[in-house]
View 1 (cartoon, rainbow, N blue to C red):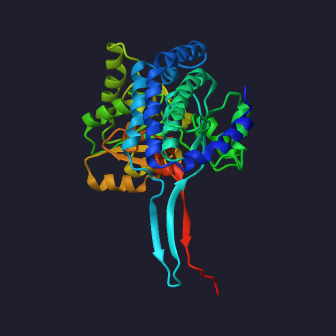
View 2 (view 1 turned 45 degrees about the horizontal axis):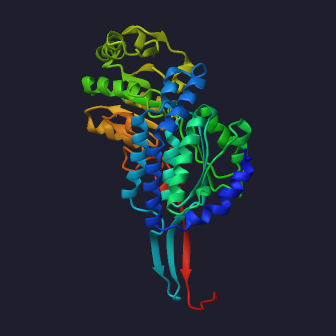
View 3 (view 1 turned 120 degrees about the vertical axis):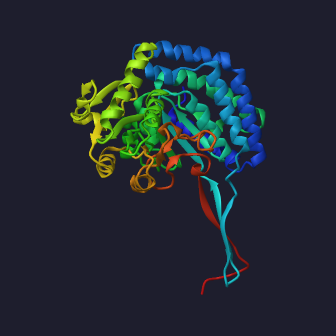
Length: 420
């Protein structure tokens, strides 16, 4: 087994191949990577079954769903790789240029970051998404999966490396850390001079550990304490349809709604719709019902568990929803400002003025009007796949696509000029 430091040495020796590759070569690599990923489907599924068996007694059913691979999901992973080919290559784009009076010509040009590292947990599809985005943006990449997904990630990386080799690129530009202990994650956080950007994708504990411990530049990707606010002027049928999607379509992901705020003027009409749609109808259809955690005012209208203060600061990642009745739009905004993780929030309203106030006031990476927060996703935003959702404000914010994996430098062309 290679040590983390040995892997970092290998990737840094090979990085210039991809840092300097032209668009055609990178796109050829993506085609080959997608082909070999599909060709290795059975091997990848067998590896995934090992992970599923090992994790069955240790993680929740919704987290097992995140870990599970199927032929359809592998096909989707391959499609995500191929979709990047149609996107413009950001590398080499001149962002600004200027001719100075002294004859100097200055260009501000987009360039790769160099080596990107991603620490992620139990989602094997992140392996191919991250590798493809890194290659298209001209970066070498180091992947460190969680132990639950390691066999799956290893099989995926093996197939992607075959694609790189097929087009004459060194497979060393794509690396999977073999050590899944906590120590290897901390080694990546401290690998100053060997990693240009570290991106954690996982729970709040992982993200905060990276923010706290990393000596390399680190993107704070978000745990998703996402809010849906149902305004006094909401279309209630629309609101409950959106809430159903935002909570139950895939509750284990970071863009799922965890908190529903309801204006007191519509609580008596809306909350029974919530209970019927998210609890009673789902039980009748043998789907998992949503557990409702209610503040004292919400419990006047429907049944559920009493919500404690911690429930409004919780990323449940499960079929659980905290509900709070608020007296005004301002109260909803105040609650979101205090409790949001700055990921995604939505307002349901027919009132344009109230909508604009919400959209302009809420300080999150993605803010929706009359739409599900589940759309906060690189693919849905037209970015191809994504490296993660940044909830910070420096360098990148929201879904991180190709441009967010680049930086820029100034190129200055002279003809003997000296500064007086």
